[in-house]
Image 1 (spheres, protein in one colour):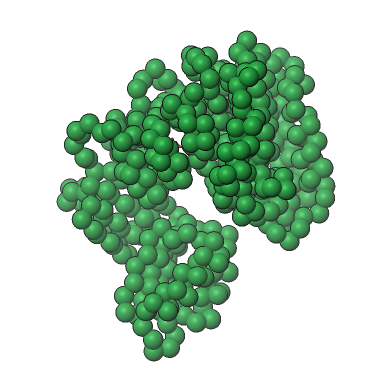
Image 2 (image 1 turned 90 degrees about the vertical axis):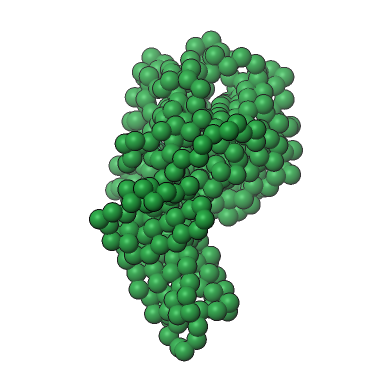
Length: 415
Ligand code: ADP
Ligand code: ASP
Ligand code: MG
């Protein structure tokens, strides 16, 4: 049994959905197909959740209209008629009803009741088209399978319950293909949850782990894992194979091509992860596994933009010791801000993190006890397997605000 995962770019329009169907048709035997929201729809749904929460009814109406139009146009192109997709109108009606009720005071909860509609609409359309093409593929609701706690927007998987639900539901008795949403789950009380932005790679790994899949393939718009993001590095080259640990490090440091939580569930069962191009599906891609050949390590570059670099110093005469570190890190944790880099000296603690809606609240909390200085819109560059030339190519002519160099990894905060 195999798991295939298709992200937003692979289902961005009608011809993309047709291409996905061709790729699935080439995979014989049992499979689970995990699909995300279409194109950049999750960004639109995020804006919708934000407007709904802020009571901005005009924007809510505009975005809701945009979402309906986008999907209905696609349905017409794929199916020939507007109401040929089972479930679609029901999801639109549910979303509309939700948007008409007033929100609670818990933003993350409201977000998770709205944003999953991106995946629900997308999968209903893809399933309908696949079935129209003559392949049998059963649509399933991922919220009944991936069971989580109620940490909305970053839910933690309840592995025991998830295993039970998946094994109960995905029996392959009537179908050899199931189509399910990535990114979303449900609590025990059936409230929708999400696994964190870009989390559908992780969903694929959860299904792979629970069902002891032969392999998991995530289909991307790049030939595989490259040694840098080709959007900003012209000379990026493909890496043919990686160990699980190396891939975990790359994704953890921010190589966007794989969600960081994806690798562990696969590593634990030695299930290979393939990263392949949906644009050139017959090419080999990158494999991440434990049986590595001998390949020469090359420098790998990871760039994170729109970072905030903050330096925190105690207002009293104390040093940055264990007690202060606990206080500072607790505040980051409490505001759910993940540090991409941290560093401390006797008098200062510095950290770099993604700019985020709770940044002002974090700063207010810190300022009651610390002097807080920060730079906005900085870049964090990580170079693994660095060489002097690799460092020079990234930093020459740039203002370096801070750096951290270990035996294998060099990191720079650049203005
Ligand atoms: P999905 O369609 O699953 O959402 P993503 O857009 O999240 O896919 O990931 C694919 C993108 O990741 C590529 O388009 C590429 O720009 C970016 N990327 C960042 N780092 C790398 C890397 N090291 N190798 C390949 N792609 C990378
Ligand atoms: N649709 C979600 C997002 O854009 C999940 C994913 O694509 O992985 O974040
Ligand atoms: Mg994505």
